[in-house]
Figure (cartoon, rainbow, N blue to C red):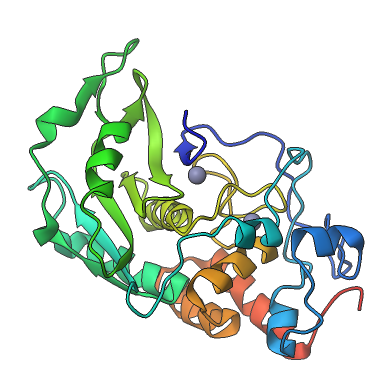
Length: 296
Ligand SMILES: [Zn+2]
Ligand SMILES: [Zn+2]
């Protein structure tokens, strides 16, 4: 697998801890420690609202057995990631397969992505793609049909509009590669292109797969720091939110204000009836408003 491609497989990464309870921060990067500076970077010169937004409050649960190497915020900046610029500031969702997905079905997901990334999002059926038959494969063991994401991403990468910071092709068909139909999505850290498969599981799962893949197109790799949307693996068992390290990367990529973003997401979670995410987000905004910065 090329290092620049990261996949959301069907299997959840093992070893995730539950949410920390209480107000004492017990995560892996307590503010002010060398570990915090390594992962999140120096924050002392930031405006207070950003400093608080990037401080890991009690709502951020550690990963119990983190992989040894994860990308820090400084490493992200050094990687020269794809960022949203004034000239390149749209996230496009492209429905695949003609009758499979109507553009109107993607509008709620585009609206969620807009709130999540702070960048205008649109459904772009007119972008079009060549007939999908070219990308059909069959799983070597089950015979299940799937679309070959590697071939799709190559095609998509060549068609990313100049004004888009991210293009995600969306299908209801299974995705896979290397003779296995086992992916929820795949995206390139470099070409601004990704692909995501919707499921019957509903808005939460689809919104998570989509935002995970869009974040990859902004150069954000898998996260080992906390329980986070960017943990490797499928949507099951992960939170919809970003940890402080990934949130700082997103702020670098699009300039989105973290607190305004949380408020917009809170509305979306309430509207969608995602009570647990609404509660988490509401509490996070309250923490930041109260100036809660553990360990300081
Ligand atoms: Zn991924
Ligand atoms: Zn993260």
